[in-house]
Amino acid sequence: MESSTETKVNDRREDETREHPPLPASEKDLHWKQASRNPRFRLALIVGGIVVLVAGFFLWRYLNSYESTDDAQIDGHLNAVSARVSGHVAKLLVNDNQYVEAGTPLVEIDPKDYEIAVARARASYQDALATAESMQVNVPINTANTGSQLSAAQAEVESGRAGVSIARQQLEAARAQLEQAIANDIKAQNDVGRYKQLVDKQEISHQQYDQAVAAARSSTAGVAAARASAAAAEQQVAQAQAKRDQMDANLRAAETGPQQNASVRARAQGALAQAQQKKAELDQALLNLEYARLVAPVSGIVSNRTVEVGQNVQVGQELMKIINLDDIWVTANFKESQLRLMRPGRQATISVDAYGKKYNGRVQSIAGASGSLFSMLPPENATGNYVKVVQRIPVKITFDPGETKEHILRPGMSVECKVWVR
Image (cartoon, rainbow, N blue to C red; front, side):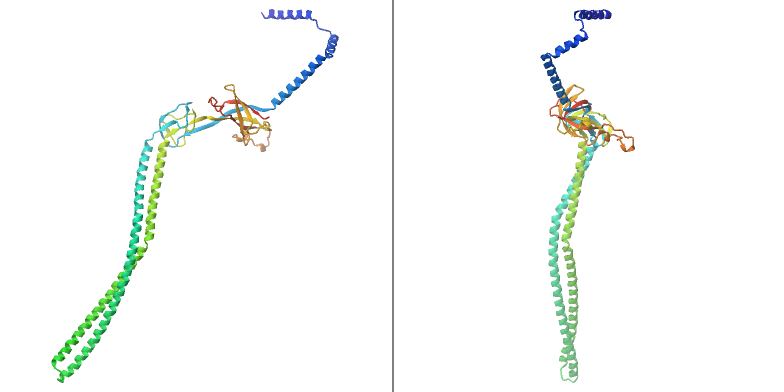
């Protein structure tokens, strides 16, 4: 079959050669000279040359109007969902690769322990609040009591001072009466001696003598009574002074009323602070109870789910990731020689390998260092084995608004990027 086809082709070529035999070399030169003298041929050559130059110019300008790379991929936020409290997983409410809205319940941890903690914290807070309220009530009562005690103590001190003054006056009077009684007794005793001589001489009657003796005895008794009155007055003075000292002590105690009020207020403030501490503990218990129900922090696709029902999770343990498809971008690793005219805001065209579609975007920023510096083993050129390698700089390119509303792009997809630099 193949040999018959080749035979036909060869026969056709032989027929064409017979109809149009090749010109000799001299005739070819003559034919070319004649054609080159033709004005139309010259015009065609000129026009063709101009077209080639124009096409080459535009081709050169187009190829220099952008920088492209296929070392690029889609990036996005990988929002990790981790447990904020420990416990057994009671319910698992989502599946892998499920789209969820922000705030959608994801996992429920057994809340019984945290409900008990909330009840205990609420009881402690109510007890502390009642104590603080009672202490607050005592503040004005204690203030009023100390004020009245101070006034009463001041009045008592004044009364005590007056009582001491009166007692001293009574003592002076008793001492004066004692001196008078002593003087009367001395006179009466002297009168008895004189009357004794007169009665012995019978110059006076025995009756007068007996009256003198009775008066002397009465004056002696009066001296004793006056001396007792003076002693009693001295005791009253001592008692009045002791009572005044006690009243002075009561006044000094009453004058500490402001300090007592400050102490009562301080205890009331301490009780209020204790109540606030219990309130904070109650709030923390309520938060822990709320944390037992994990919700989606953002809208996106559930991925890398590692939690199962009945699993005992710890604080900070990662359970799954939420991929936010509303906030994705492209990380394009351009060669350092391609960054000469690249600036933030430059328009970019993004071709996604997975779908063969093109998207519009713009350069958002250029990384602060080359990608090799962020590697686990960055290059160290000072070691001596230096080899120059063209470095690549990550460039962040964001999609124009509305370009990713279909939610079909995924972080990690390979793309090709063109950044229009002219």
